[in-house]
Length: 382
Image 1 (cartoon, rainbow, N blue to C red):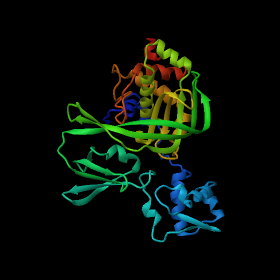
Image 2: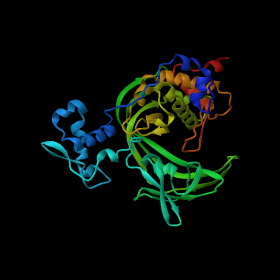
Image 3: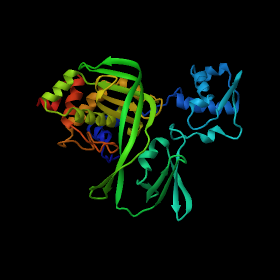
Image 4: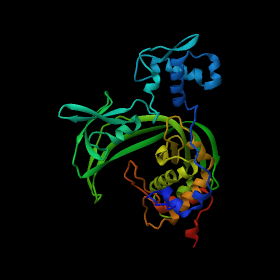
C-alpha cells in the first residue's frame, strides 16, 4: 500500500505520524439526532405520516413540543406565511399538496438550495444545485463555476428566485470569494482553563458572514488579475463552537517576540481547523473559524473554531474535550514545517475569505505552545 499525500495539515500529520493510520480506531460518523434543525425535518415527515402526540416525545426528545411550536408559527419562518403543522389536541400536517420528505436536502441543513441554470440564447437548462450556505461563495455574480469539467461564468444571481444564471466561458482565470465573519456568544455550556492559563469555552454561537467580493486569479501563474466588490446580504446561523481567549500575558509575549497579534491568531485558527479532523473524524469543510483581536463579548483576542453545520453535530464537543491534544499537535505541525513564513501544509487555508492575510507562522506556534503550558517548542529549545 502506498499513500500519496496531498497539500494540507491532515496529510502532513499522517506523513509525520504513520502510526495514526495503523493504530487508530475506525472513523465514526458524527451525528446529533437532537440537533434542532435535523429534528425539525424528522418531525415534519413524522407529522405527515401520522399526527404527533405528547407521548411521542419518548421518541423525539424533550424539545419536540418547542420545535413543533416554531414549525406551527408563521411569524417564526421567513420563507412562507403558512405553517407546516397545526395543533388540535395533536399536531397535524396541514398542507396535503406538499410531501415534506421531498423538500428535505439530504446533503445539507442550510435550507432550500439555489438552482444553477444554463442560459443558452434564451433557452434554459438546469445544470444542478448548490446549498444555500455555499451559494454566495460559489455562484455569486462574476464567479467562474466548474461543472462536469466545463467552465461557466455566472452572469446573474437572482436572490428572490434562488437561481444562478450561467453561460459557458473560455476564461483563463478562476475566482476566489472574499468574505468577513463575526461571532456572537449566545450561551456557554462549559468552560475551563488551559495549562498556560488561557480560558477555553464551549458554547452556543451565532456566526454572521458576508461575501464582500472576489478575486480573479490567472490559471497556471496564479497572478491576481483583479479584485471585484460585491453587495450581498449577510448570512447567519447558530451553532456550537470552541472559543480560545488570549490573556494579556499572551498578548505581551507575542509583542515581546515581535510577532503580529492578528497574524498569530489568524494563522493558529487555520492550523487548528486543518488538524481538528484528525481528532473529530470529520472533514475540514465541516469546520469554520473566526479570529478577532477584540471581541465585544469576551473583551479581548479570541479564536473561535465552530461546527459548520447549523445547530452542531458533535464536532465542537469533541474538539473541546481534546483541545490540549489538538493544540499540541497543531504546534508541532507548525514548528516542523520547513517553510519560512507559512504554507498550505501549516497555516494557509485554501478557503480563507481574506486571502490568507495577515498570517504570522512563528506567532501561531508561540501562542499554541503557551496555551499548552510549553512556552518554547522542541525546535526552539535547540
